[in-house]
Structure formats: structure tokens, C-alpha cells
Image (cartoon, rainbow over all chains, first blue to last red; front, side, top):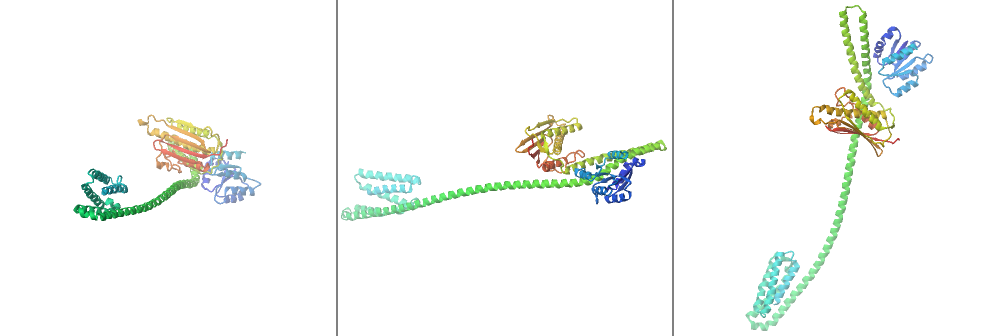
Length: 126
Length: 457
């Protein structure tokens, strides 16, 4: 399962790679990283069909996670990837907006990796 | 004999005129003596069959009296009147002298002398009447003056009354103005204080958000490192290196793992502080709902108590509640108000526990009974809540800072210094109430919450 992680913090890459070391090695998950909303869209241009899931931060400089979500839902209505939003602000406003624009799930920072792993595995198996 | 009568009336006149009985007591005695002498001489004159000797005695008496009147300052006012006597006395004296020296010639001139005496007597009377008339005019003028004076006095009194009234009014106004000014100053101070709190709160929120992200990385990486260490340990066992080396490597890995755990532990600590700060700034999402404040307070009182008991088994305190049963349900934000209660009670229990701990070996405090008390009262559309403890109390400089974020007197790691500042925001901003504190060092502390309530039963 190919997963695109969108976050403006480059260290997210190292964190995910280490956290999901086993799963990556087993070939369960394959992670790609984009460091902005624009980056993510560029990446999707070439790999639209490969990406199954997108994990995106909401608060990013430039294009925000919500805008990215809107664009994805508009540009890829046929083969919609699963989109999970992640934010530091666990407020209802962000949650409602994310859900309104078609997010499949919503996570708050700090990310609980045990929970995330479980969710990802559910999607993988399902 | 006629001179005695003159003396007699003169004395009467003086006494009456000058009111000597009251004003010149000394002179009055002398005048009375002189009068007695005059009366005595009159009597003697008749007894001794109109003796010429007695008649002669009258001259020194008259002369002496006139001399005294002429000389003494006290008689100045009547001197001119008395002078009208002079011609009569002189004519009488000359007549008597002449009679004594040449009695036979005197007889032929007697009529002239009698005539002169009569004229001088008339002269005396005329002056006398004139004087009395003048006196009357003067009297009248004096009375007029007196009346005017009285009028002036009355005017003055009424003016003084007016002035006093105005002064009173002005004084009252000044006091009122002073009070208004004091109130304004107090309000200004409160405004400055709440403005400070607000900006500090915003700053706190900003800092918290900025710290949260890097802190997440620290925590996540350290956690993942612990996992990596475990994996590493497993992998090493698969290799074929000497056992001694394996053990050495395992030791290093274990140290590394422990270090990572320490990083995680302290990272979590920082995280909880940041969480507190964020909670602090979080726009109150809570909505007001009808709440049984008494039950809420009671619940959090117990929660705080057992929270402290869990950490310190020795700890014990009396929980006193004085709830107003008429409160019923009032519209508040239950979670937020609950947090305030938790903070206040936690602090109260901490204060009494500290007092007990600090005075453990002090026999004076052997009977010290820690007590935390809550009182609620609904009165005049306002809900009053008092949380009182008999703990350590606070000095003024501590009291001044307790509502500032990050101010704490607890040892490092035990308090974030956010509890009361958050409580302050919840009460003053979210509930538009007042959070106030009074404290006496060594005696205890009282927190007073005043909430405006719309009854919702």
C-alpha cells in the first residue's frame, strides 16, 4: 500500500520511516513524502494511480491541508485515495471542515503511532 | 443744708449713670460711704438746730467729691455734667464766707446772694435738663445703632449659616468625587491587570503552539529509539560474536534505551505543561448549561482531596461544606468551572499539607487541624463561592503574582504555574465574574468567586 505523507516538517520522513521500519521492510507499506501541499499535488500528477492513502497535516505554509484535500477531491473524483488529516489543533472547527471536504479520518498531534498503525493495517487488510 | 441734698442727688446720679454697683465696685462702696456721710450731716444739721458748723462741713465734702470726679479717669463721661454744679457751690461758699466775715453787711446784700444762688441753681437745672435731653438723643441713637447691629448680626448669622451650608455641600461633593476617583483608579488597575493577563495568555498560547511541534518530534523520536534499541538487541543475538562482546554491546544498548526513556519522560513532562498552556488559551468551547454548582464543587473537592491522598498517605484534612440549598441549577460551563474548583482545592490542600509538613516538629502546632472549607451563597442575582483554607497563607508579594501564568511557589516539577491564571481567565472572561483572594501569612487563604447568574431552574 502506497502512502503519501504531507507535512512541512522534513523530520516527519525520518520519524515515519523508523516507526514503520518493520512494515516497510515487510512490504506492507510504502511511504512517499511531500513537504507542502503544492509538492503533494506535483507528486500526485505522476503517481495518481499508485497512491492509496494520503496523510496530510492541516497547518502548513502555502497551501493548507484543507485546500489540498479540496483539490484532491476535485481532481481525482474517480479513484479517490483515502485521506487522513492530521493537525495540532484538535478543535472542532478543523475537524468539521476536514469532514465536510471529504476527509476519511482525522488525527490530532502528537500522533499516536500505535493507533495510526492499527488504522493503516485495517485499511491494508480491508 | 441745700448742699447736702445736692451731694445726695449727685451721688445718686453718679451711681445710676455709671452703674457703679456692677461696673466700679470699689467706687460704689466709697460713694455709699459719702452718701451716708451726707445723710448723717443732714440729720446733724437738724439736730443741732441748723448749726452753721455743720453747714461748713458740707464744703470739704463737696470739694472732695468734685475733686475726685475731676481727677479720676473713671468719671470722665460725667465730668462735664458735674461741672454745672460749680457756680452754685462757689456762690454758696462765697455767700457763707461773706456772712461769716461780715454778718451785718451781709444782711444788706443778702438778697443779691440769694438771687445769685437762685440763678446758679437755675443754671445748674438748665444744664441738667440739657444734659438729660442730650442723653436721650444719645440713647435713641445708641438704640438705633444697637438695632442696626442686631440686624447686621442677624444678617451675619444667616450668611454664616449659608456659608456653612455651602461648605457642607462642597465637602460632601469632594468626598463623593474622591470616592469616584478611587473607584476609577481601582477600575483602571483592574483593567491594566486583566489586560496584562490577556496579553500574557495570548503570548502563552503562541509559545505553546510553537513548542508543541518540536516537542512532538522529541517525544516521537525518543520513543522510536527505544523500539530501535530493542530491535538492535534482538539482532545482535543473531550474530556470532563472542559472548563477552555481546554482553558489552547489550550494556551500551541498555544505557541508550534508558537514556531514551529519560528523554521520553521529560518530554512528556514538558508536553503536559504545554497542554496546560494550550488549555489556558483555548477559546472556551464550553457552553453554559444548567449546573448544580454545589454538586460540582463537592465532586471536585473530593477529587482534589483523593488526588493528594494518593500521593501522600499521611495527609489528612477536614472538608467542610456550607452549601446554599436554594441555588438549584445555574447556567455555567461545568468543565471550566470544575477546573477552577480543582485548582482552588488542590492549592488549598497543598497549603494545609505544607503547613503541617513545615511545622511537623513544632509543638505549638501539635493540635493543628488542616481544614478546607467551601461556602456557596446565592444572593441578589449573584453566586458567591468561597474556598477557604487554614494553611500557610501568602505574603503580599506572592499574592500579587498568583494569577500570572507560570508563577508557582511549588517545587520544580510539581506545579506549572498555570492553574490560577487559567482559573482567573475562566472566571473573569468566560463567566464575566470576579476572582479575588485574601490571605494572611501563616493563617490561611480565602478565594472568592463572584458569578453573575441567570437563574435556570
